[in-house]
Image 1 (cartoon, helix red, strand yellow):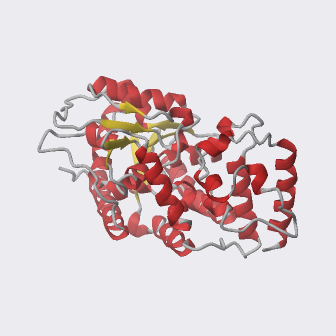
Image 2 (cartoon, one colour):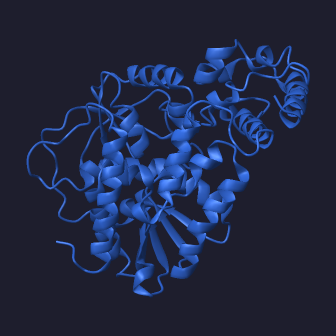
Length: 380
């Protein structure tokens, strides 16, 4: 371990010992704490500068924020573990000392490359609004992005551009501050060229990232737009199975998004099962904080635990990462956009297994080309 990490571990241990009531409310919904301790107080009991936490522990935090939400002392464990990740990176020349990092490095490098990015900037036109679909949705289903963009063009009378580029959240989640700032500046540069001040996001992580890092921009979830403007020519899927609604953990602090999603389902005529842990008390799907890469065993445990909380055979979410995660256990999964833009042809297609990385990257390449064709006015 390095000096910065060891010193931060020592400081953190003292803070936890002074503030933690040992009530263990956070233990009910945190996969990481349940894996490594009986309470935060227990975890940091013997930690000091000479005896720091194992590096795998900070990199096993999902950063979902459940702990802070239920903590009487409001100890931000998610932010504490992110700071510990950052310290580990700083002590290791900016590189996270954790297994699986090469996968994240590859993801981020490609997510900002010309091969997998596209924008309306080729039109040399200014827009007040820009649609940011995100990485996970473009991996999941490229056609849903085009349908969503066409919908938004009608809502905003064509005063909306599109930008297919990562927000840099994976790099931020790993604790790589400098590299995140570099990547994020590339995203903001494209937005500035477009002249947009309103960012419409389909990804909850993008929503959070931009909201926290660009106070001059107004961030709006696509769900608020759809709830307000409705869906014309909607076709209800009559063969749909009972489903449970999972709120992605990045939306924890945004009741307006929770309301918008439920209003959409109500207006479309769909009934759903509500998880006992939902909205601001929702639990992570297991993939938060990049632990689907850094701690695969813990990821799988949490996916199965969360999925087993639903009696329904299908889990619906509005985060493509969550949808892909829930295709792993014995449940089926589906994205809310699959319902919104269902064309009435054939049966609904549920996800029975996660997308392979190769299929995900192939979809992203297809998505880029579909967007470029849409920008040029060549879409069907």
